[in-house]
Amino acid sequence: MKQFSIGLNILVLILIGILFYLHFDGKNKSVKPVSAKRGDNNSKDAPATGSRIAYFEMDSLQANYNYFKDALSLLKDKEQAMNTELAGLEKAYQRRVNEWQKKGASMSQSEADAAQRENAQLQQAYQSRKQSLEESVAKQSMEFKKDIKKKIEGYLSEYNRDKNYTYVLSYEPDFIFLKDTTLNITNDLVTGLNATYKKK
Image (cartoon, rainbow, N blue to C red):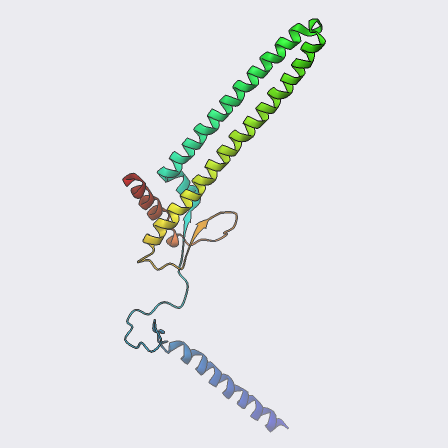
C-alpha cells in the first residue's frame, strides 16, 4: 500500500512537470499572422487581430473647436433675441392690462367684453409666438449638433486612413472609469478641425 502511494505521487509529479513544460514552451512559439486574404501568402502587412481604439475629450473639443464656439455664440444670440422679443410682448401686454385697470368700473359692459376678448387674444398670441421662437432655437441647436457631428466624423474618416483605429470614442467621465492617455487624439482632432474650418 505504501509503495502504491509513492508510485502515485511520482506519477503526479511527472504529469505536473509535463504540463509545466507544455505551458511555458507554448508561450515561446511565434504565432504567424493571418494574411489579409485567404490564399494570399505574399501579403506583407497583415491586419492585427485586436481592435485599436482611440478617444477624444468632448469638453476640450467644445472649448477649443472654433466652429463649435461660433455656433454656440450664434445660438446664444438667437436665444437673446428671443428673450428680448418675448420681454417686449410681455411689457406691451402689461401696459394694456394697466389701461384696463385704470378704466375699471367706468367701463361699459361692451367695453369690458371687448377687453376680455382682447386679453385672451394677447395671451394666445404671446404663447403662440413663444412656442414658435423656442421651436426655432431648438431646431437650430439640433442642426448645429448634427453639423458638428458630421464634421467630426468627416475629419476622423480622413485622419484614420493611416491610423487604422477600429473605434474612436468620445470620452464622457460619467461612462468611462479608466483611460490610457496615450490613446487621446483630442489635440489632433481640434487642430485638424480648426484648420479645415479656417479654410472654409
